Image 1 (cartoon, rainbow, N blue to C red):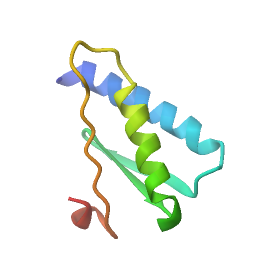
Image 2 (tube, helix red, strand yellow):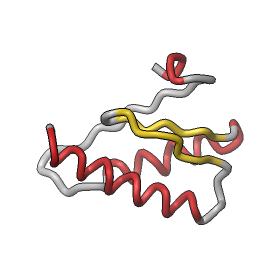
Image 3 (spheres, helix red, strand yellow):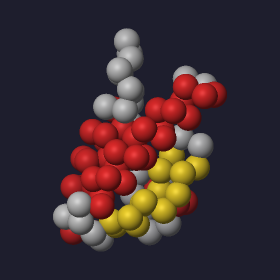
Image 4 (cartoon, rainbow, N blue to C red):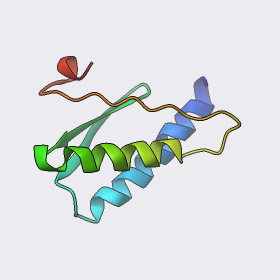
Length: 82
């Protein structure tokens, strides 16, 4: 997906993720978006909860004929997460 359609999908996911994070049950915050990536700061104890919740919300952001694939990387910084 390119252009405006991809922008809409990531923005929908970001809104849903932020609403979920605002509930306060996970010690995490969304820091920034870089193209089709989202960067989070999260406590180690909540890492798997965040990963599962973000993946679910991202793949659910749009109804398409093909599945949206979400890859998640972790690390102390953005370079390590790749």
